[in-house]
Amino acid sequence: MSTPAGRDLAGQWREVPELLKIEHSLFALPFAFMGAVLAARGLPSPRVGLLVAGAMIAARTAGMSFNRVLDARFDAANPRTAARAVPAGRVSPALIWVMGFVALAALSACAWALNPLAFKLSFLCHVLLFTYSLTKRVSWACHLFLGLVEAFAPLGGWIAVSGALKHPTPWLLGLATITWFAGLDIVYATQDADFDRRSGLHSIPARFGLPRAFLLARLCHVATVLCAALAGLAYGAGVLYAAGLAVVASLFLYQHSLVGPGRDAKLQFAFFDVNVWISLAMLAATLLETRAWRSLGL
Image 1: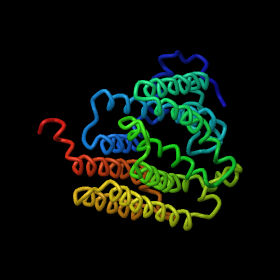
Image 2: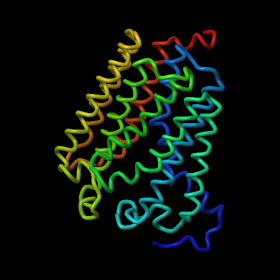
Image 3: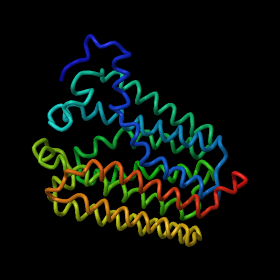
């Protein structure tokens, strides 16, 4: 693996947005706001909203930073990822390590400003964010572990407002998030099934083959819709939430119509764009159900 010798710090910093895929925060950030809106039964205060956003962006930055440096030697050997900034030597691993640990500190700082439970759980988040990149070295269940990491989005949003987890709704939303991210990660991992087998890495596509992997991803997303529906029932949600969930189910169907064994031309679109629409549709359904606009005096 080459080194970033001769590249100034400013040059390395310019690589960071692409390196960390900051735009992928759009996946989980709406779920965090969804938890906060449901707990507040409307819009949370601007202070809470900003702290939730800050915590989520910090968590995403930490997780991606550790992923990029811990997987650098595998990325360098994989033709699909060899051009990434760290394995290609355009960014120093030391810079990314520092960024990751600073992001963990920012996550805990936001959590401390929210409430004691959020602060205590932030340290569990530290462990999960650091270790999730290592799970594919030991188990094909790594996709579920990633889902567990992302489940802290709705759980954290709820805790940010309520300071507790005594209601079933955030737990059910957490399950929905686990299965949602597990399913999308399985689809994404189909690109590297052959490489994973050769490299001794574990994933559902590498272990069970592509047809079964796509089937399991679909089953995960069926479970996502069911868990989100149960979360709505536990909350007492009505027709607006149900309508939003119907849109989400339709988007999942559309997503899976785009991909399958031997059909990966639209995988990036299905992975990123459609999942952003799904998370935004869930948030929109929540905002409509809670009549959040009333918080704005409308």
